[in-house]
Length: 145
Image (cartoon, rainbow, N blue to C red; front, side, top):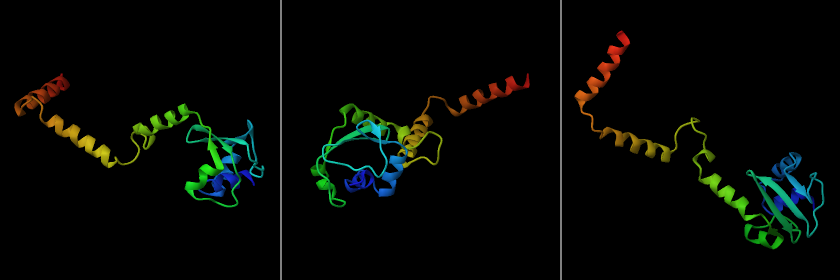
């Protein structure tokens, strides 16, 4: 079976064309060598895939005849990925920058709740209304000099 079709059949990629594109970008290797989409996969081969900025490794146990259900994937491949790679992925998912870079787009609901809590917390400061007038009057005096 072709490697692009195999990766699609074992549900590693959503479509076969995405699998072929990733292979063209040299993100899939077999025995340490980058492969072409037409490369045949055999039982016992170890495939290394770079996806989501981590390196997955899987051993081919069986070749499926067609795309299989998610519950049957473990019958056809064995995950050989190092545990530290999964820890890197877990930490990346926990960081806020993973889902949206700072300053890009509208805040999410969680961001809005955090901002509202922060702003509400500032309203209960020790300064009274008269103190604010004094604070701003000092700024105006320094600008006129």
